[in-house]
Length: 546
Image (tube, rainbow, N blue to C red; front, top):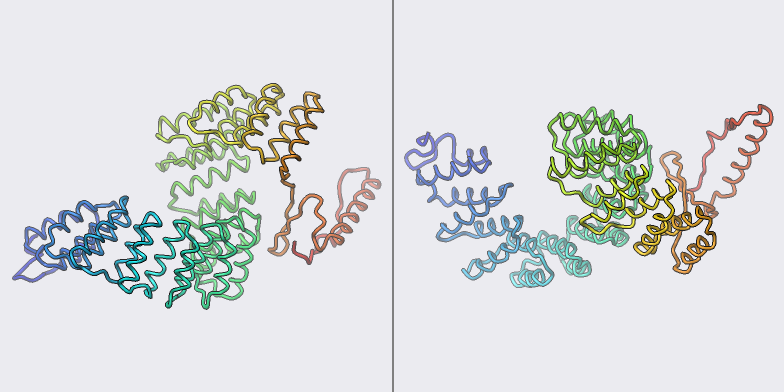
């Protein structure tokens, strides 16, 4: 075996480097390293550097092996130094990369263009980043686009958006990656409109830039804007260049805005072109489930051959929120049969199913199994599901005891669930106490005041209910208005309660008046409560967008 590695001072078949590429696991890498030492190949700089790089960049993290090997190199090259800096920058100890960089300078080794992107990545605070930024200028690498992109991203990650913008404006060499880094940084920090300004200024845009802008809208819950921009992209570009991440972002926007037709178009496009992967399949499941088309979600789920925990969790949650509680639990059982270990998100779906289905005993059992069987610590979402389950079932005292036992501070939503349970089952005294507490906890949430006012109304204490309403107005709590949404030819129209701002308001009112008159006429003729809509109503179209 060893003779195949080394013969007459030269490499023979199969080459050692090829074996290094073929066996990336830590155990095999250590064996090959041992062979290289015993055969005397470790004296070759290229072999040692390659083994060092594989240690440093291994996914499971073997920086201790890399560090030991690096210390044995008499005169490390800049490639070896960069390898160590890169390895530490992506490890759990990124600050060590800065120490390696300082040690490199002390030994008289000058950095090159590949050094600073990884050193910048290792900066965990603005002070260290500004010092490295000064080093970039000192060694004359500020025109390098990769260094510029690294600085922009790191400044944005630290929340220093203006400094990132300054780096961008002062750079003399900017490519599409620099522009995309800046707009992404704006979006990550919630400045999506400034990100759009950068996007509109870009001299050229590639698919990554479009995807970053759409993802920025989705991250900031500007779903309609994301879909609108995707419409523009579809008109001006070849769909074959679209990435999976772009489709996932658009499907997320469609799921949250109810843009059913747009999501269906993406699904049909994916079916006609190629098989969609796991990430896209999961996004489709979530989209159809949130749009209420649970059968379509099931069909997508059945076509995913190699499902991970995310796909299973999406299906469980989709069934749960659509009221298919027993089906959700059955999918969870099938998941366990498939030997896929559930995570915290999976149990949110399971407990939601129990809550919506009134499955008290099952919910208690799964909540206990989550901790004892799967060693998962319940988060506030899991406690919220359990409180909602117990409150809906009328066990409000047990729910309150569970809230008091929570290891974290309960939020207004959890107390609100308990308040709703008290109202639902007529537990007035407890409801009054909870209602007062939830207002103190969440004083700007209009629903909390409405809940307490309803408690007083059920007790016949109208003056107290009126006082709660008055307090709400004095504190200038904004009431969240109800709204409805319809989709016509892929365009979503949103209507608020008593909203007269829509430019087609008069036409809409005329149509509704006509429908009402037709309904009254039909009822008087047939003495039935059936509404017969005129045929042309189904062809009418509102030509204004709100």
